[in-house]
Amino acid sequence: MAYSMDVFRDVFRNPLGLTVPALTILIVVFGLPTVFFFFASLNAPEYSLSNYQAFLYRGANLRILVQTIEVSVFATLICLVIGYPTAYLITAAPKRARIALTVLIFLPWLTSGLVRTYAWILLLGDNGLINRTLLDLGLISSPLALIYNRLAVYIGMVHIMLPVMILPLLSVMQGIDKSLMAAARGMGARPFSAFWRVFLPLSLPGVRSGTILVFVICLGFYITPQALGGLRDVMLSTLIATQIATSFNVGMVASAAFILLAIAAVMLSVFGLDSSGKQAHPDRSHRKDRPKSVFRSSVLTKGLGDRVRAAYWARELYQQGDASNWLALAGSVFLALVMTFLLLPGLLVIVMSFSGGAYLEFPPSTLSLQWYQSFFGDPSWTGALWTSVQIGLMVAVLSTIVGTLAAYGLSRTTPRIRSSVTICLMTPITLPAVVVGVAIYFGMVRLGMLGTATGIVLTQSVGATAYVVAIVSATLANFDRRLERSALSMQASPLQTFMRVTMPLIRPGVIGGALFAFIHSFDEVVQTSLVSGFSIRTLPLKMWENMRNELDPTIAAIGSVITLMPILWLVALYVTWWRAGPSARKRWLNT
Image 1: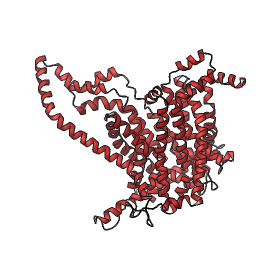
Image 2: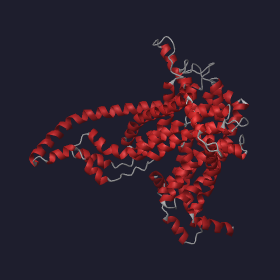
Image 3: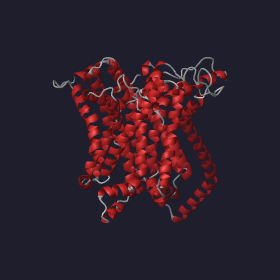
Image 4: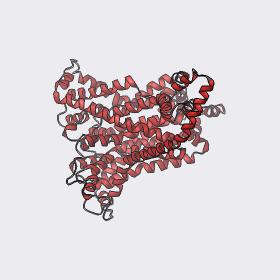
Protein backbone atom coordinates (compact mmCIF):
# COMPACT_ATOMS: atom_id res chain seq x y z
CA MET A 1 0.00 0.00 0.00
CA ALA A 2 2.81 2.40 0.91
CA TYR A 3 4.54 1.59 -2.39
CA SER A 4 1.38 2.37 -4.38
CA MET A 5 0.98 5.65 -2.50
CA ASP A 6 4.56 6.61 -3.38
CA VAL A 7 3.95 5.73 -7.02
CA PHE A 8 0.77 7.82 -7.15
CA ARG A 9 2.57 10.72 -5.46
CA ASP A 10 5.34 10.57 -8.07
CA VAL A 11 2.80 10.43 -10.87
CA PHE A 12 0.87 13.31 -9.35
CA ARG A 13 4.04 15.39 -9.45
CA ASN A 14 4.59 14.40 -13.10
CA PRO A 15 1.02 14.32 -14.47
CA LEU A 16 2.15 13.52 -18.01
CA GLY A 17 2.79 9.98 -16.78
CA LEU A 18 -0.98 9.49 -16.46
CA THR A 19 -1.24 9.61 -20.24
CA VAL A 20 1.11 6.62 -20.68
CA PRO A 21 -1.62 3.89 -20.65
CA ALA A 22 -3.74 5.67 -23.27
CA LEU A 23 -0.73 6.51 -25.44
CA THR A 24 0.55 2.93 -25.16
CA ILE A 25 -2.72 1.50 -26.48
CA LEU A 26 -2.78 4.12 -29.24
CA ILE A 27 0.81 3.47 -30.32
CA VAL A 28 0.67 -0.34 -30.17
CA VAL A 29 -2.75 -0.75 -31.79
CA PHE A 30 -2.69 2.12 -34.28
CA GLY A 31 0.59 4.09 -34.31
CA LEU A 32 3.20 1.42 -35.03
CA PRO A 33 0.98 -0.48 -37.51
CA THR A 34 0.47 2.80 -39.38
CA VAL A 35 4.25 3.26 -39.66
CA PHE A 36 4.78 -0.31 -40.86
CA PHE A 37 1.84 0.05 -43.20
CA PHE A 38 3.38 3.20 -44.66
CA PHE A 39 6.66 1.39 -45.29
CA ALA A 40 4.70 -1.39 -46.98
CA SER A 41 3.16 1.15 -49.33
CA LEU A 42 6.72 2.16 -50.30
CA ASN A 43 7.76 -1.46 -50.99
CA ALA A 44 10.25 -1.49 -48.11
CA PRO A 45 13.13 -2.28 -48.06
CA GLU A 46 13.46 -1.43 -51.78
CA TYR A 47 11.55 1.85 -51.30
CA SER A 48 9.75 2.92 -54.45
CA LEU A 49 6.55 4.70 -55.42
CA SER A 50 5.41 1.91 -57.70
CA ASN A 51 2.28 1.17 -55.64
CA TYR A 52 1.18 4.79 -55.76
CA GLN A 53 1.94 4.99 -59.47
CA ALA A 54 0.01 1.80 -60.15
CA PHE A 55 -2.97 3.17 -58.23
CA LEU A 56 -2.99 6.60 -59.85
CA TYR A 57 -2.30 5.36 -63.37
CA ARG A 58 -5.32 3.07 -63.28
CA GLY A 59 -8.26 5.06 -64.64
CA ALA A 60 -10.92 3.32 -62.55
CA ASN A 61 -9.05 4.03 -59.31
CA LEU A 62 -8.53 7.66 -60.23
CA ARG A 63 -12.24 8.09 -61.00
CA ILE A 64 -13.16 6.58 -57.64
CA LEU A 65 -10.72 8.90 -55.87
CA VAL A 66 -12.12 11.99 -57.62
CA GLN A 67 -15.65 10.77 -56.96
CA THR A 68 -14.85 10.30 -53.25
CA ILE A 69 -13.60 13.88 -52.97
CA GLU A 70 -16.55 15.19 -54.96
CA VAL A 71 -19.15 13.41 -52.82
CA SER A 72 -17.41 14.51 -49.62
CA VAL A 73 -17.25 18.15 -50.75
CA PHE A 74 -20.89 18.34 -51.78
CA ALA A 75 -22.11 16.54 -48.65
CA THR A 76 -20.08 18.96 -46.53
CA LEU A 77 -21.47 22.00 -48.34
CA ILE A 78 -25.04 20.76 -47.91
CA CYS A 79 -24.41 20.20 -44.20
CA LEU A 80 -22.99 23.73 -43.90
CA VAL A 81 -25.89 25.34 -45.77
CA ILE A 82 -28.40 23.58 -43.52
CA GLY A 83 -26.35 23.49 -40.32
CA TYR A 84 -25.32 27.15 -40.03
CA PRO A 85 -28.81 28.68 -39.96
CA THR A 86 -29.96 25.83 -37.72
CA ALA A 87 -27.23 26.56 -35.18
CA TYR A 88 -27.90 30.30 -35.42
CA LEU A 89 -31.62 29.86 -34.78
CA ILE A 90 -30.97 27.51 -31.85
CA THR A 91 -28.54 30.02 -30.35
CA ALA A 92 -31.10 32.82 -30.66
CA ALA A 93 -33.88 30.75 -29.07
CA PRO A 94 -34.90 31.15 -25.40
CA LYS A 95 -32.93 29.11 -22.89
CA ARG A 96 -35.40 26.25 -22.43
CA ALA A 97 -36.06 25.95 -26.15
CA ARG A 98 -32.31 26.06 -26.82
CA ILE A 99 -31.67 23.19 -24.41
CA ALA A 100 -34.53 21.13 -25.89
CA LEU A 101 -33.36 21.71 -29.46
CA THR A 102 -29.77 20.83 -28.56
CA VAL A 103 -30.96 17.56 -27.05
CA LEU A 104 -32.92 16.83 -30.22
CA ILE A 105 -29.71 17.37 -32.21
CA PHE A 106 -27.83 15.02 -29.89
CA LEU A 107 -30.36 12.19 -30.20
CA PRO A 108 -29.78 11.31 -33.88
CA TRP A 109 -26.04 11.83 -33.42
CA LEU A 110 -26.05 9.19 -30.68
CA THR A 111 -28.20 6.83 -32.74
CA SER A 112 -26.52 4.13 -34.77
CA GLY A 113 -25.58 5.26 -38.27
CA LEU A 114 -26.41 1.77 -39.50
CA VAL A 115 -29.98 2.09 -38.19
CA ARG A 116 -30.38 5.51 -39.79
CA THR A 117 -29.16 4.14 -43.11
CA TYR A 118 -31.66 1.29 -42.80
CA ALA A 119 -34.39 3.86 -42.12
CA TRP A 120 -33.65 5.60 -45.41
CA ILE A 121 -33.84 2.26 -47.23
CA LEU A 122 -37.37 1.89 -45.84
CA LEU A 123 -38.21 5.44 -46.89
CA LEU A 124 -36.62 5.62 -50.35
CA GLY A 125 -37.02 2.08 -51.66
CA ASP A 126 -39.31 1.15 -54.53
CA ASN A 127 -41.75 -0.21 -51.95
CA GLY A 128 -40.74 2.40 -49.41
CA LEU A 129 -42.95 4.86 -47.61
CA ILE A 130 -42.45 7.76 -50.03
CA ASN A 131 -43.19 5.79 -53.19
CA ARG A 132 -46.15 3.97 -51.63
CA THR A 133 -47.64 7.24 -50.46
CA LEU A 134 -47.26 8.86 -53.88
CA LEU A 135 -48.75 5.79 -55.57
CA ASP A 136 -51.71 5.70 -53.20
CA LEU A 137 -52.38 9.39 -53.86
CA GLY A 138 -52.25 8.79 -57.60
CA LEU A 139 -49.44 11.30 -58.10
CA ILE A 140 -47.21 8.75 -59.85
CA SER A 141 -47.91 5.62 -61.86
CA SER A 142 -44.67 3.79 -61.11
CA PRO A 143 -42.11 4.04 -58.28
CA LEU A 144 -39.57 6.84 -58.50
CA ALA A 145 -35.88 6.02 -58.59
CA LEU A 146 -35.12 7.43 -55.15
CA ILE A 147 -32.56 4.86 -54.05
CA TYR A 148 -29.34 3.35 -55.38
CA ASN A 149 -28.21 6.66 -56.83
CA ARG A 150 -26.18 9.74 -55.88
CA LEU A 151 -29.21 11.56 -54.45
CA ALA A 152 -29.82 8.79 -51.91
CA VAL A 153 -26.13 8.84 -50.94
CA TYR A 154 -26.27 12.58 -50.26
CA ILE A 155 -29.47 12.24 -48.24
CA GLY A 156 -28.02 9.46 -46.09
CA MET A 157 -24.66 11.15 -45.57
CA VAL A 158 -26.16 14.55 -44.75
CA HIS A 159 -28.59 12.94 -42.31
CA ILE A 160 -25.70 11.29 -40.45
CA MET A 161 -23.25 14.21 -40.59
CA LEU A 162 -25.57 17.18 -40.01
CA PRO A 163 -25.35 16.94 -36.18
CA VAL A 164 -21.55 16.83 -36.51
CA MET A 165 -21.73 20.16 -38.36
CA ILE A 166 -24.25 21.77 -36.01
CA LEU A 167 -22.59 20.93 -32.69
CA PRO A 168 -19.26 22.78 -33.30
CA LEU A 169 -21.22 25.74 -34.65
CA LEU A 170 -23.36 25.78 -31.51
CA SER A 171 -20.28 25.62 -29.33
CA VAL A 172 -18.80 28.72 -30.96
CA MET A 173 -22.01 30.71 -31.43
CA GLN A 174 -23.02 30.35 -27.80
CA GLY A 175 -19.70 31.93 -26.80
CA ILE A 176 -20.22 35.06 -28.92
CA ASP A 177 -21.08 38.16 -26.90
CA LYS A 178 -24.65 39.04 -27.88
CA SER A 179 -24.10 42.68 -26.89
CA LEU A 180 -21.93 43.12 -30.00
CA MET A 181 -24.95 42.60 -32.26
CA ALA A 182 -27.02 44.94 -30.11
CA ALA A 183 -24.27 47.57 -30.32
CA ALA A 184 -24.19 47.29 -34.11
CA ARG A 185 -27.98 47.65 -34.28
CA GLY A 186 -27.76 50.61 -31.91
CA MET A 187 -25.37 52.34 -34.31
CA GLY A 188 -27.91 52.09 -37.13
CA ALA A 189 -26.89 48.82 -38.80
CA ARG A 190 -29.65 46.76 -40.33
CA PRO A 191 -30.03 43.18 -39.03
CA PHE A 192 -28.32 41.61 -42.04
CA SER A 193 -25.47 44.13 -41.97
CA ALA A 194 -24.94 43.52 -38.23
CA PHE A 195 -24.93 39.76 -38.82
CA TRP A 196 -22.57 39.96 -41.81
CA ARG A 197 -20.08 42.33 -40.21
CA VAL A 198 -20.15 41.20 -36.58
CA PHE A 199 -21.64 37.74 -35.97
CA LEU A 200 -20.43 35.87 -39.05
CA PRO A 201 -16.70 36.71 -38.62
CA LEU A 202 -16.83 35.63 -34.97
CA SER A 203 -18.52 32.34 -35.88
CA LEU A 204 -15.94 31.36 -38.53
CA PRO A 205 -13.95 29.11 -36.11
CA GLY A 206 -17.06 26.95 -35.77
CA VAL A 207 -17.55 26.95 -39.54
CA ARG A 208 -13.96 25.84 -40.04
CA SER A 209 -14.12 23.12 -37.39
CA GLY A 210 -17.45 21.72 -38.54
CA THR A 211 -16.55 21.82 -42.23
CA ILE A 212 -13.19 20.10 -41.86
CA LEU A 213 -14.54 17.51 -39.44
CA VAL A 214 -17.48 16.62 -41.70
CA PHE A 215 -15.31 16.51 -44.83
CA VAL A 216 -12.66 14.24 -43.29
CA ILE A 217 -15.27 11.84 -41.89
CA CYS A 218 -17.11 11.78 -45.24
CA LEU A 219 -13.90 10.72 -46.98
CA GLY A 220 -14.04 7.43 -45.07
CA PHE A 221 -17.77 6.71 -45.48
CA TYR A 222 -18.36 3.06 -46.24
CA ILE A 223 -21.78 1.80 -45.08
CA THR A 224 -24.08 4.55 -46.37
CA PRO A 225 -22.73 4.81 -49.97
CA GLN A 226 -22.73 1.04 -50.32
CA ALA A 227 -26.28 0.65 -48.94
CA LEU A 228 -27.92 3.62 -50.67
CA GLY A 229 -25.73 4.16 -53.74
CA GLY A 230 -25.44 2.40 -57.05
CA LEU A 231 -22.53 0.91 -58.92
CA ARG A 232 -21.48 4.38 -60.07
CA ASP A 233 -21.35 5.72 -56.51
CA VAL A 234 -18.46 3.61 -55.21
CA MET A 235 -16.14 5.46 -52.84
CA LEU A 236 -12.51 4.75 -52.06
CA SER A 237 -13.32 3.14 -48.71
CA THR A 238 -15.45 0.54 -50.49
CA LEU A 239 -12.59 -0.19 -52.90
CA ILE A 240 -10.17 -0.66 -49.99
CA ALA A 241 -12.54 -2.97 -48.11
CA THR A 242 -13.17 -4.99 -51.28
CA GLN A 243 -9.43 -5.44 -51.87
CA ILE A 244 -8.96 -6.68 -48.30
CA ALA A 245 -11.85 -9.13 -48.60
CA THR A 246 -10.83 -10.55 -51.99
CA SER A 247 -7.14 -10.38 -52.87
CA PHE A 248 -5.23 -8.69 -50.06
CA ASN A 249 -2.35 -6.91 -51.77
CA VAL A 250 -0.64 -5.07 -48.92
CA GLY A 251 1.10 -2.56 -51.17
CA MET A 252 -1.99 -1.61 -53.16
CA VAL A 253 -4.23 -1.41 -50.09
CA ALA A 254 -1.64 0.67 -48.24
CA SER A 255 -1.18 3.08 -51.13
CA ALA A 256 -4.93 3.63 -51.47
CA ALA A 257 -5.31 4.13 -47.72
CA PHE A 258 -2.45 6.62 -47.52
CA ILE A 259 -3.69 8.61 -50.48
CA LEU A 260 -6.96 9.02 -48.60
CA LEU A 261 -5.04 9.77 -45.42
CA ALA A 262 -2.91 12.36 -47.20
CA ILE A 263 -6.00 14.26 -48.35
CA ALA A 264 -7.38 14.29 -44.79
CA ALA A 265 -4.01 15.28 -43.31
CA VAL A 266 -3.59 18.17 -45.73
CA MET A 267 -7.03 19.52 -44.91
CA LEU A 268 -6.46 19.19 -41.16
CA SER A 269 -3.00 20.77 -41.27
CA VAL A 270 -4.01 23.67 -43.51
CA PHE A 271 -7.31 24.60 -41.89
CA GLY A 272 -7.07 22.92 -38.50
CA LEU A 273 -9.86 22.45 -35.97
CA ASP A 274 -10.76 25.34 -33.66
CA SER A 275 -14.01 25.41 -31.76
CA SER A 276 -12.87 27.53 -28.90
CA GLY A 277 -15.07 30.38 -29.84
CA LYS A 278 -12.59 32.96 -28.60
CA GLN A 279 -13.20 36.38 -29.95
CA ALA A 280 -9.82 37.49 -31.09
CA HIS A 281 -8.93 41.13 -31.64
CA PRO A 282 -12.27 42.59 -30.57
CA ASP A 283 -11.06 46.17 -30.76
CA ARG A 284 -9.82 45.78 -34.34
CA SER A 285 -13.02 44.03 -35.40
CA HIS A 286 -15.14 46.78 -33.87
CA ARG A 287 -13.14 49.45 -35.59
CA LYS A 288 -13.06 47.69 -38.94
CA ASP A 289 -16.56 46.26 -39.04
CA ARG A 290 -18.64 49.22 -37.92
CA PRO A 291 -21.47 49.86 -40.36
CA LYS A 292 -20.79 52.35 -43.10
CA SER A 293 -23.83 54.37 -42.05
CA VAL A 294 -21.96 55.37 -38.90
CA PHE A 295 -19.09 56.84 -40.92
CA ARG A 296 -21.41 58.58 -43.31
CA SER A 297 -23.37 60.18 -40.49
CA SER A 298 -20.17 61.49 -38.92
CA VAL A 299 -19.59 63.91 -41.83
CA LEU A 300 -23.00 65.49 -41.45
CA THR A 301 -23.87 68.16 -39.02
CA LYS A 302 -25.22 67.00 -35.70
CA GLY A 303 -28.66 68.44 -36.29
CA LEU A 304 -29.02 66.87 -39.72
CA GLY A 305 -27.77 63.53 -38.33
CA ASP A 306 -30.32 63.63 -35.54
CA ARG A 307 -33.16 64.31 -37.96
CA VAL A 308 -32.03 61.52 -40.30
CA ARG A 309 -31.79 59.03 -37.45
CA ALA A 310 -35.16 60.08 -36.08
CA ALA A 311 -36.82 59.54 -39.45
CA TYR A 312 -35.00 56.21 -39.89
CA TRP A 313 -36.07 54.80 -36.53
CA ALA A 314 -39.63 56.07 -36.98
CA ARG A 315 -39.86 54.17 -40.25
CA GLU A 316 -38.20 51.07 -38.80
CA LEU A 317 -40.56 51.13 -35.83
CA TYR A 318 -43.54 50.42 -38.07
CA GLN A 319 -41.77 48.05 -40.48
CA GLN A 320 -39.72 45.99 -38.08
CA GLY A 321 -42.68 44.43 -36.31
CA ASP A 322 -44.07 42.72 -39.41
CA ALA A 323 -40.58 41.79 -40.66
CA SER A 324 -39.62 40.30 -37.31
CA ASN A 325 -42.82 38.27 -37.20
CA TRP A 326 -42.24 36.90 -40.66
CA LEU A 327 -38.58 36.11 -39.89
CA ALA A 328 -39.54 34.39 -36.65
CA LEU A 329 -42.16 32.32 -38.48
CA ALA A 330 -39.72 31.40 -41.25
CA GLY A 331 -37.09 30.43 -38.66
CA SER A 332 -39.57 28.25 -36.78
CA VAL A 333 -40.63 26.49 -39.98
CA PHE A 334 -37.00 25.94 -40.96
CA LEU A 335 -36.14 24.46 -37.56
CA ALA A 336 -39.21 22.23 -37.72
CA LEU A 337 -38.15 20.91 -41.13
CA VAL A 338 -34.58 20.23 -39.97
CA MET A 339 -35.77 18.44 -36.83
CA THR A 340 -38.22 16.41 -38.90
CA PHE A 341 -35.41 15.43 -41.27
CA LEU A 342 -33.20 14.34 -38.36
CA LEU A 343 -35.80 12.60 -36.18
CA LEU A 344 -38.48 11.27 -38.53
CA PRO A 345 -36.51 8.31 -39.98
CA GLY A 346 -35.80 6.91 -36.51
CA LEU A 347 -39.39 7.40 -35.37
CA LEU A 348 -40.67 5.65 -38.50
CA VAL A 349 -38.45 2.64 -37.79
CA ILE A 350 -39.90 2.42 -34.28
CA VAL A 351 -43.51 2.64 -35.47
CA MET A 352 -43.03 0.25 -38.39
CA SER A 353 -41.35 -2.34 -36.15
CA PHE A 354 -44.80 -3.02 -34.64
CA SER A 355 -46.33 -3.97 -38.01
CA GLY A 356 -48.39 -7.12 -37.85
CA GLY A 357 -48.26 -7.90 -41.56
CA ALA A 358 -45.80 -9.92 -43.59
CA TYR A 359 -43.82 -6.79 -44.39
CA LEU A 360 -43.22 -3.40 -42.82
CA GLU A 361 -45.84 -0.73 -43.44
CA PHE A 362 -46.68 2.74 -42.24
CA PRO A 363 -49.00 3.24 -40.59
CA PRO A 364 -49.25 -0.39 -39.49
CA SER A 365 -52.60 -1.96 -40.40
CA THR A 366 -52.31 -4.21 -37.35
CA LEU A 367 -50.04 -4.06 -34.32
CA SER A 368 -47.87 -6.99 -33.37
CA LEU A 369 -44.64 -7.89 -31.60
CA GLN A 370 -43.78 -10.55 -34.16
CA TRP A 371 -40.52 -8.91 -35.25
CA TYR A 372 -39.39 -8.50 -31.64
CA GLN A 373 -40.23 -12.17 -31.05
CA SER A 374 -38.26 -13.02 -34.17
CA PHE A 375 -35.30 -11.09 -32.78
CA PHE A 376 -35.30 -12.44 -29.24
CA GLY A 377 -36.28 -15.94 -30.38
CA ASP A 378 -33.41 -16.33 -32.84
CA PRO A 379 -30.17 -17.53 -31.16
CA SER A 380 -28.07 -15.95 -33.91
CA TRP A 381 -29.51 -12.51 -33.14
CA THR A 382 -29.42 -12.82 -29.36
CA GLY A 383 -25.89 -14.24 -29.56
CA ALA A 384 -24.74 -11.25 -31.60
CA LEU A 385 -26.47 -8.92 -29.13
CA TRP A 386 -24.76 -10.55 -26.14
CA THR A 387 -21.41 -10.38 -27.92
CA SER A 388 -21.87 -6.66 -28.56
CA VAL A 389 -22.86 -6.03 -24.94
CA GLN A 390 -19.86 -7.93 -23.60
CA ILE A 391 -17.42 -6.20 -25.93
CA GLY A 392 -19.05 -2.82 -25.28
CA LEU A 393 -18.71 -3.19 -21.52
CA MET A 394 -15.05 -4.21 -21.79
CA VAL A 395 -14.34 -1.29 -24.12
CA ALA A 396 -16.18 1.12 -21.81
CA VAL A 397 -14.25 -0.02 -18.73
CA LEU A 398 -10.84 0.04 -20.41
CA SER A 399 -11.29 3.33 -22.25
CA THR A 400 -12.88 5.06 -19.25
CA ILE A 401 -9.97 4.17 -16.98
CA VAL A 402 -7.16 5.12 -19.35
CA GLY A 403 -9.07 8.07 -20.82
CA THR A 404 -9.89 9.58 -17.43
CA LEU A 405 -6.29 9.21 -16.28
CA ALA A 406 -5.07 10.83 -19.49
CA ALA A 407 -7.54 13.73 -19.23
CA TYR A 408 -6.62 14.27 -15.58
CA GLY A 409 -2.93 14.32 -16.40
CA LEU A 410 -3.35 16.60 -19.42
CA SER A 411 -5.31 19.11 -17.37
CA ARG A 412 -2.19 19.62 -15.25
CA THR A 413 0.36 20.02 -18.04
CA THR A 414 1.39 23.05 -20.05
CA PRO A 415 -0.94 24.17 -22.87
CA ARG A 416 1.57 23.22 -25.58
CA ILE A 417 2.04 19.67 -24.28
CA ARG A 418 -1.68 19.30 -23.63
CA SER A 419 -2.52 20.36 -27.17
CA SER A 420 0.03 18.01 -28.79
CA VAL A 421 -0.94 14.94 -26.76
CA THR A 422 -4.65 15.63 -27.18
CA ILE A 423 -4.25 15.84 -30.96
CA CYS A 424 -2.49 12.45 -30.91
CA LEU A 425 -5.26 10.87 -28.82
CA MET A 426 -7.97 12.38 -31.05
CA THR A 427 -6.38 11.04 -34.25
CA PRO A 428 -8.47 7.83 -34.46
CA ILE A 429 -11.77 9.77 -34.54
CA THR A 430 -10.59 12.64 -36.76
CA LEU A 431 -9.19 10.50 -39.59
CA PRO A 432 -11.28 8.48 -42.08
CA ALA A 433 -12.56 5.37 -40.31
CA VAL A 434 -11.51 3.02 -43.09
CA VAL A 435 -7.89 4.26 -42.96
CA VAL A 436 -7.75 3.73 -39.20
CA GLY A 437 -9.38 0.32 -39.63
CA VAL A 438 -6.93 -0.82 -42.30
CA ALA A 439 -3.93 0.23 -40.19
CA ILE A 440 -5.33 -1.56 -37.13
CA TYR A 441 -6.11 -4.62 -39.26
CA PHE A 442 -2.48 -4.72 -40.36
CA GLY A 443 -1.41 -4.47 -36.70
CA MET A 444 -3.80 -7.20 -35.55
CA VAL A 445 -2.37 -9.52 -38.19
CA ARG A 446 1.16 -8.93 -36.90
CA LEU A 447 0.06 -9.35 -33.28
CA GLY A 448 -1.89 -12.53 -34.03
CA MET A 449 -5.15 -11.06 -32.67
CA LEU A 450 -7.18 -11.05 -35.87
CA GLY A 451 -10.60 -12.57 -35.23
CA THR A 452 -10.28 -12.46 -31.43
CA ALA A 453 -12.36 -10.64 -28.83
CA THR A 454 -9.21 -9.03 -27.45
CA GLY A 455 -8.36 -7.64 -30.86
CA ILE A 456 -11.86 -6.16 -31.26
CA VAL A 457 -11.76 -4.62 -27.76
CA LEU A 458 -8.38 -3.00 -28.45
CA THR A 459 -9.54 -1.81 -31.87
CA GLN A 460 -12.65 -0.13 -30.51
CA SER A 461 -10.89 1.21 -27.41
CA VAL A 462 -8.63 3.41 -29.55
CA GLY A 463 -11.59 5.52 -30.67
CA ALA A 464 -13.55 5.17 -27.43
CA THR A 465 -10.61 6.52 -25.41
CA ALA A 466 -10.61 9.65 -27.56
CA TYR A 467 -14.26 10.32 -26.66
CA VAL A 468 -13.56 9.79 -22.96
CA VAL A 469 -10.58 12.16 -23.05
CA ALA A 470 -12.64 14.85 -24.81
CA ILE A 471 -15.59 14.63 -22.39
CA VAL A 472 -13.59 14.37 -19.16
CA SER A 473 -11.25 17.14 -20.30
CA ALA A 474 -14.28 19.40 -20.82
CA THR A 475 -15.41 18.58 -17.28
CA LEU A 476 -11.98 19.37 -15.87
CA ALA A 477 -11.70 22.66 -17.78
CA ASN A 478 -13.59 24.60 -15.10
CA PHE A 479 -12.53 22.45 -12.16
CA ASP A 480 -11.43 24.52 -9.16
CA ARG A 481 -7.99 23.17 -8.26
CA ARG A 482 -8.00 25.13 -5.02
CA LEU A 483 -10.15 22.33 -3.60
CA GLU A 484 -7.34 19.85 -4.23
CA ARG A 485 -4.74 22.15 -2.73
CA SER A 486 -6.91 22.59 0.33
CA ALA A 487 -7.19 18.82 0.78
CA LEU A 488 -3.43 18.37 0.35
CA SER A 489 -2.74 21.11 2.88
CA MET A 490 -4.84 19.15 5.38
CA GLN A 491 -2.44 16.17 5.08
CA ALA A 492 -4.55 14.21 2.60
CA SER A 493 -2.53 12.02 0.26
CA PRO A 494 -2.72 12.60 -3.51
CA LEU A 495 -4.73 9.38 -3.91
CA GLN A 496 -7.17 10.38 -1.17
CA THR A 497 -7.51 13.84 -2.70
CA PHE A 498 -8.33 12.38 -6.09
CA MET A 499 -10.83 9.81 -4.78
CA ARG A 500 -12.60 12.04 -2.23
CA VAL A 501 -12.42 15.49 -3.84
CA THR A 502 -11.69 15.34 -7.55
CA MET A 503 -13.55 12.18 -8.56
CA PRO A 504 -16.93 13.09 -7.00
CA LEU A 505 -16.88 16.46 -8.78
CA ILE A 506 -15.96 15.08 -12.21
CA ARG A 507 -18.15 11.96 -11.90
CA PRO A 508 -20.79 13.22 -14.39
CA GLY A 509 -18.07 13.64 -17.02
CA VAL A 510 -16.60 10.21 -16.30
CA ILE A 511 -20.01 8.56 -16.54
CA GLY A 512 -20.74 10.48 -19.73
CA GLY A 513 -17.43 9.35 -21.19
CA ALA A 514 -18.19 5.73 -20.27
CA LEU A 515 -21.60 5.91 -21.95
CA PHE A 516 -20.13 7.43 -25.09
CA ALA A 517 -17.45 4.74 -25.12
CA PHE A 518 -20.11 2.02 -24.91
CA ILE A 519 -22.18 3.64 -27.67
CA HIS A 520 -19.08 3.94 -29.87
CA SER A 521 -18.33 0.25 -29.36
CA PHE A 522 -21.92 -0.88 -29.85
CA ASP A 523 -22.27 1.06 -33.12
CA GLU A 524 -18.84 0.40 -34.68
CA VAL A 525 -19.03 -1.47 -37.99
CA VAL A 526 -16.22 -0.55 -40.37
CA GLN A 527 -13.17 -1.25 -38.20
CA THR A 528 -14.82 -4.21 -36.46
CA SER A 529 -15.67 -5.83 -39.80
CA LEU A 530 -11.98 -5.68 -40.77
CA VAL A 531 -10.53 -7.22 -37.59
CA SER A 532 -13.32 -9.62 -36.54
CA GLY A 533 -12.59 -12.26 -39.15
CA PHE A 534 -15.32 -14.86 -39.54
CA SER A 535 -15.38 -16.11 -35.95
CA ILE A 536 -16.97 -13.17 -34.10
CA ARG A 537 -20.16 -11.41 -35.12
CA THR A 538 -21.35 -8.37 -33.24
CA LEU A 539 -24.92 -7.13 -33.61
CA PRO A 540 -24.03 -4.29 -36.05
CA LEU A 541 -22.06 -6.75 -38.21
CA LYS A 542 -24.99 -9.17 -38.38
CA MET A 543 -27.36 -6.30 -39.16
CA TRP A 544 -25.07 -5.15 -41.96
CA GLU A 545 -24.85 -8.63 -43.43
CA ASN A 546 -28.64 -9.01 -43.42
CA MET A 547 -29.12 -5.55 -44.95
CA ARG A 548 -26.88 -6.52 -47.86
CA ASN A 549 -28.53 -9.89 -48.44
CA GLU A 550 -32.21 -9.16 -47.76
CA LEU A 551 -34.39 -6.47 -46.20
CA ASP A 552 -35.17 -8.43 -43.04
CA PRO A 553 -38.02 -6.77 -41.07
CA THR A 554 -36.37 -8.05 -37.89
CA ILE A 555 -33.82 -5.27 -38.32
CA ALA A 556 -36.61 -2.74 -37.68
CA ALA A 557 -37.18 -4.23 -34.22
CA ILE A 558 -33.45 -4.17 -33.52
CA GLY A 559 -33.20 -0.64 -34.86
CA SER A 560 -36.01 0.57 -32.62
CA VAL A 561 -34.24 -0.85 -29.56
CA ILE A 562 -30.96 0.79 -30.58
CA THR A 563 -32.74 4.07 -31.36
CA LEU A 564 -34.19 4.19 -27.85
CA MET A 565 -30.80 3.58 -26.25
CA PRO A 566 -29.60 7.22 -26.48
CA ILE A 567 -32.68 8.32 -24.54
CA LEU A 568 -31.72 5.96 -21.74
CA TRP A 569 -28.15 7.32 -21.82
CA LEU A 570 -29.41 10.90 -21.56
CA VAL A 571 -31.70 9.97 -18.69
CA ALA A 572 -28.78 8.34 -16.90
CA LEU A 573 -26.63 11.43 -17.45
CA TYR A 574 -29.41 13.69 -16.23
CA VAL A 575 -29.90 11.64 -13.05
CA THR A 576 -26.16 11.68 -12.39
CA TRP A 577 -25.99 15.39 -13.06
CA TRP A 578 -28.98 16.14 -10.81
CA ARG A 579 -27.63 14.10 -7.92
CA ALA A 580 -24.28 15.87 -8.13
CA GLY A 581 -25.65 18.95 -6.30
CA PRO A 582 -26.24 22.58 -7.32
CA SER A 583 -22.58 23.64 -7.35
CA ALA A 584 -21.49 20.62 -9.38
CA ARG A 585 -24.40 21.14 -11.79
CA LYS A 586 -23.29 24.72 -12.35
CA ARG A 587 -19.73 23.66 -13.10
CA TRP A 588 -20.99 20.94 -15.44
CA LEU A 589 -23.12 23.41 -17.37
CA ASN A 590 -20.20 25.82 -17.66
CA THR A 591 -18.21 23.15 -19.49
